Amino acid sequence: MVHLPGPLTRLDPARLSRLFTSRLRSPQLTSRLGVLLGAAVAVCLLTGYLSHAIQHPPAWFYWPSRPVNLYRVTQGLHVATGLAIVPLLAAKLWSVYPKLFRWPPFRDAVHAIERLSLFLLVAAALFQVTTGILNIALWYSPMSFFFTTAHYWTAWIFAGSLLIHIGVKLPIVRRALAAPARPAPPTGMTRRGLFAAVGAAVAAITVATVGQTLRPLAGLSVLGPRDPRIGPQGLPVNQTAAAAGVAAAATDPGYRLEVAGPGGTLRLSLAELAALAQHTAQLPITCVEGWSATATWTGVPIRDLVTAVGGHDGHSVRVTSLQQNSLYRVSTLPPPHAADPLTLLALRVNGEPLDLDHGYPCRLIAPNRPGVLQTKWVARIEVLP
Amino acid sequence: MTRTARPAATSWTRRVLVAVGVLCAGYGIVGLLTDPSVSLPNYARYTITVLLGHDLLVMPAAIVVGAVLTRWLPTWAKATVQGALLVTAAVTVVALPLVLGYGRRADDPSALPRDYHRGYLLCLAVIWLATAALLVWRARRRPTARNSEEHS
Image (cartoon, rainbow over all chains, first blue to last red; front, top):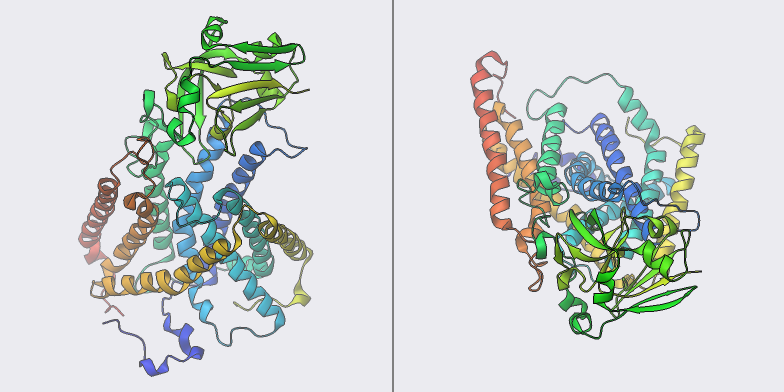
């Protein structure tokens, strides 16, 4: 039914790229899409590296405990921008798609290497976007590798092959962006029309998902993988007590929290913890997957516990969970977070004792920090030398 | 115009971009190859599937579907419907894993808590109602536009 220009006998490799007849494709279009896509990718790479560095801080890295919502903004931006890349990347790849069938495939060795680097670029871009989408949809089975490290290393390949691509194409891009506007094609879509469609797609995707972190839009975000209003005690949960295998240990009446420091070790029951001075703070729980929700947490400031075992501001604090065999069993509070009076060992959320799935008997909640580091079912707190 | 510039014209900016790019990509590749938590054969299989799936299946299918669906439309309506198809395709990519719902967890009602079939249909309804409104507006304005040529 599709009318191909010319008989099918002309489908030889040398003519394949001439099957694409849209007059919308041009270096001008590709360059303009590329600038937008490049900006979006830069946002993803920077916010992604930031999230990585907070979780695995290099020696030179410093991350403050304020503003309280900073990580919430950067990680929300990471996921929202990653989703907005879908229509941008689609349009960009469409605009250069006939070049895939260029014949002969390369002119010389340099050209061959350049085309191979494009394979790396396109593969890395598709990998990052698709694994990101699968990950926020919690659909891990198509990715039979560890998402976190694969997404991280591929980001470096993506960044590198993108820089190579920009370096190679810079003269074409400069010329295209400086060129006077061509007359619009007499029929079909105009460049402005295509940008309007891409913009509409970005807007639709954003409105349909961003309510997972922007609570006022939660009602509109019909495709949000999370709803900040839904979960035990009105708060989403990433890992349940059953999945973590801690239900028995966490509800054991013999539970004691160990607090160790230079001045000795305390062993506190839940009742003894509740008898200490309690503070209340409004803090978000912010998942690396891009959702977040604010709650009112009540508990003992970590700073008070540090002082009680002879530590002081400037120490790092290691927090260990009852959970066994998890990558996130242990997290370390760097000095700014350990000393922040808002950092709590929370016993209550929104006025009730913590639900088992929120980390009963007690959990860590600190400002400006990814949720995976907000250790639940805390067993031990240790002031590091 | 689309010819790659020859190395003779290489400016310092371009050399630095390519050199830094090679370093970054090399760092990522070495990281992938040496990190035991990345299961390489599975990683390679996934990446090749996604790359070939996009280049040889999804993109040609999208082009053909777009061409077929807009073929018999009058010229003045074509671009609007093409745009709506692009929005539909992009929203579908984001919605599909949620609609399929493999990420749901029996013990965690907060994981994928919504009715995504309904959500996806709502998105489609909004996109196509907006498109219909735009088409009506275009149709009314049409006599003043100079779109009397035949469509190609």
